[in-house]
Image 1 (cartoon, helix red, strand yellow):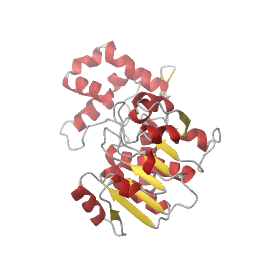
Image 2 (tube, helix red, strand yellow; image 1 turned 180 degrees about the horizontal axis):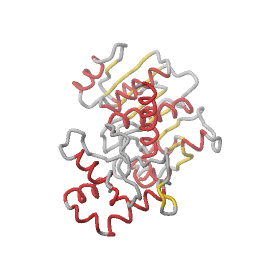
Image 3 (cartoon, one colour; image 1 turned 90 degrees about the vertical axis):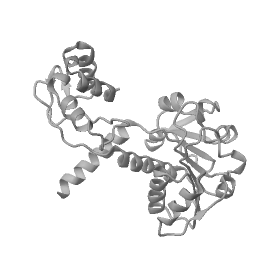
Length: 290
């Protein structure tokens, strides 16, 4: 929505003077603490993720400078300072894999020897990098609808990885399974999944898309990053009617147990706050080193 407003304001600057667009943005800044009682607070920043806006786009700098750094637009007493612009694609890939790795740390079997990754795109690669760095597996398997992409995926790696010809072949006996595909219909079936395995389901981010079948969703203990997001956006949960046991954060803070003795599913949809915190960490590290 912010991106759409940005384009409108960039193309039609006179809209900056209308209350229609000024009020929502002012409310956003108020709600996140940048403005308090009409005054601009010090050492506070607004982080915005602009989906589908490429850094290579000739308009993106104009959008940022003319809109997000425009004091009239934000109703600020002082012109805001633009701290940084980052490529969100890399941050999203890494933070998604990092959150999945937290779920694996909490829910995977104590003895986990086989990792299976379904998919061969950026999320598949980021999950491979994070999972193999944090955990020790004796075997890693990969499956992809596109065999050429799967082989390219493996060729880019230094460690041995097995390319499987079917999902069933890839997941049988696996202790940890990552689904990072563009599937809209179930590709992973409960009858293939080893009892006690952990599944980090990253794809199927729309209400009518699925990666996991009803049997798996209903028999596993289901964890999510956000109940609100999962019940509104996850086809795996909505269409299966599966019950969400807990949010990942509720396990971390001790409100709910990690049932690692059972088959578990972590349905990841991603949250804007994850991008915001990750971007802040990147900026802090950059400032400390350069």
